[in-house]
Image (cartoon, rainbow over all chains, first blue to last red; front, side, top):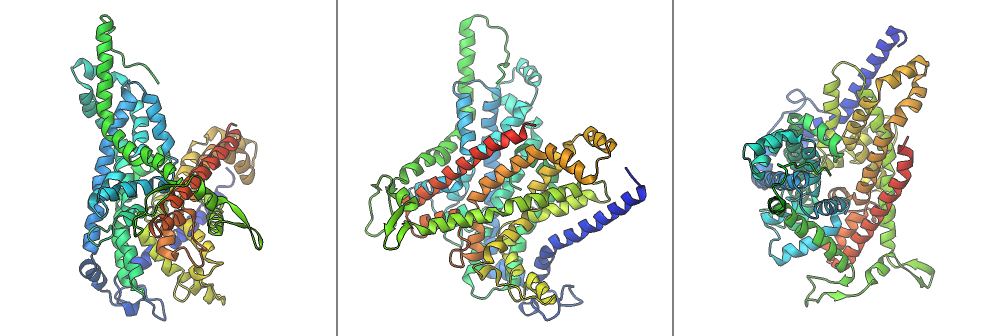
Length: 281
Length: 322
């Protein structure tokens, strides 16, 4: 490279540039956090009041309202239970199917796999109506079954895991087979332990995708009892004429913070998942 | 596929055939749960939607209407034109408006991609705290959802929102953003760009940049290639496959987009300015219960997405094959 002084100067400039843009991008979240601990009257003051204790008196009242007066405790539990069930179901069924596609020979294997791939491009709105009608006929609308079952089977997850399983060397399997391991033993004791990164990636993406999923829960629920966080939050926002910002922001924090936490804890799986399959982040 | 599930060379055909059958049976068991779910919730519903798009059915009408086969009527009503008092007119002008909205919102794709590439290039430098930066820039996209949409209602608030506050500061009067027919779409585009920047697109570009061979760069430096020339002749061509992939996915998502934002932030308004095809489908199916018409709409979306993807693929493959 050229003059080291120039390079250093440019790097410093870039650093400050990134800091500035980063602050801009994080500012809304900062506002969300401070607003969630304000009194309604403190939200839009004449002068910006951003620093707790110094410029306004923080309160946990919005969280109290969200948790007790509105059914957010229920929504949060629903979201958590549904996301966990869907994630467990998807990882289990996808990994079983992926094992068959990657490791076993059976008639029609490639055709079935191709039909899986083919449906990945079909918009969700296509299947939404018939599945809704089916669930209605079964009287499953506004039940946990309607929220969990249709989301539990994923062509994408099967595809992702199958690609990973194919790359595991077969020699390991041979050794296990000689030791008298059956197919299920190979799946349990060889393939699954070696695929932890891929399984974690799928699990994290499924969890977050389901946690933020909005359209399907909106369609199949119609009571407080089964609302998930996004649906409850949207319902609360439309129910009230004037927007109660602290309460809404407390609700938004409940929905947003878990996703950020899961991301920070499982960051490397995220990056891997995006590289593997180009999933929406 | 490799055929290498090697087993001890057959002690005659019968044992071999037996293991084959045993393997198929095992495969069926492994496959069963997923395949069953796939049939019930994906592939059969696709067929059902196709049939439904040729029918008329209002499941909550009183008295109960029977499902009725109407042929291509839904598609004619959706896509067709008729000759009226004032010349030719669309049978469903809403459909064309909402298609226009959907396409208009997709104009943010190139902007979003360019900014993501720029960001990825910045994040690819060796500077202090780069991993922290990468994490911070990813946060808005991971946090996206109904919570952040409500947050953006504040950002676009005409009186108290930070955008209009800042504009006021420099002596400008900001628009009413989400309730203004002209500004509602640009507002949603700004939000889309800001919340997705630093997300998957940047990560993909970053991965692509890290794969650009150092040798290529060194050769370019020896040639005395300036920064821009190096970008144009080395980096950009090397990133073409990634760019192409991101674009294809973004177009597929773009055609299906707009429901969550429309429902939570604008109710598709003002005057249908932010109603996209997916929002329209939802409204037809779950507000008006025109299940046949909504299915036809979904089929049209499917067809458009398929055509766009095939075109992208055809056109893109040439430019990707370097």
